[in-house]
Image (tube, rainbow, N blue to C red; front, side, top):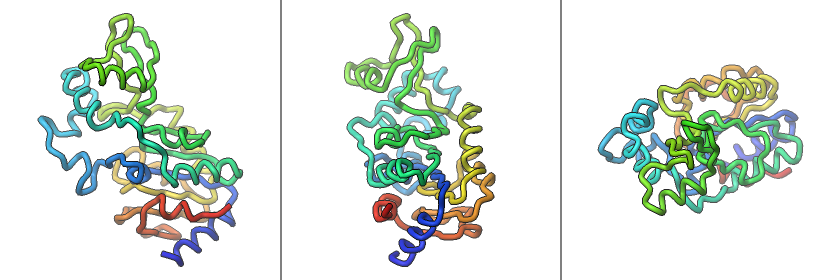
Amino acid sequence: MQENQKRLQKLIDESERIVFFGGAGVSTESGIKDFRSVDGLYNEKYDYPPEQILSHEFFFAKTVDFYKFYYDKLLVEGVKPNPAHYKLAELEKAGKLTAVITQNIDGLHQLAGSKKVYELHGSVERNYCLDCGEFYDQNYILECKKSGVKVPRCKCGGVIKPDVVLYQEGLDDQTVEGAIYSIINADLLIVAGTSLTVYPASGLINYFKGKNLVLINKTPTVADGVATLVIREKVGEILSKITL
């Protein structure tokens, strides 16, 4: 681990346009469950498979059941950024990191201080009325949860939908374009906490033509063979030791 840490430090020191691409493994150290690991959400038992619950069709057909799952598993109260989030914010402030691209919907990067964040799958922090478009933050949805409201509704009476990308929905074009631009112009791409199995998001790393690709993930990924450096450790433990 020490040798890999030194190599990563050297790569960061020598780079000027670093982009970080992160998945669920970045937030597990904050207490948020991932989806596909042994103890992840997809291996828990529900009335419906999680992949079905988190779909566009299911949201509109069984909104009460969707929110039951959403309240219980995706709307996690009191979660705080971990050392990985804070170190990335430091790297950005120091002018080394040009963008964070995340598959997570928890908003922890912004909470830690990151400014340029491309949220490929949306965020629990943003919620909109399907009828009038009125915006509601996460606190409103949390209050609905605490009050026993089965489906959050707007003051106009419309159903409120989290601004998260469900199965059967496409990614936001502007977000994807910004992420691609950042990756194309990066000289170091750090991919962490993701198995790179969720498309189309994971396909974005194919746009990277820079000098060095670093993978930090506890399990193998499809890109291990083309990486400059592969580290099999927790993301926060590795990034926390980086010095500026």
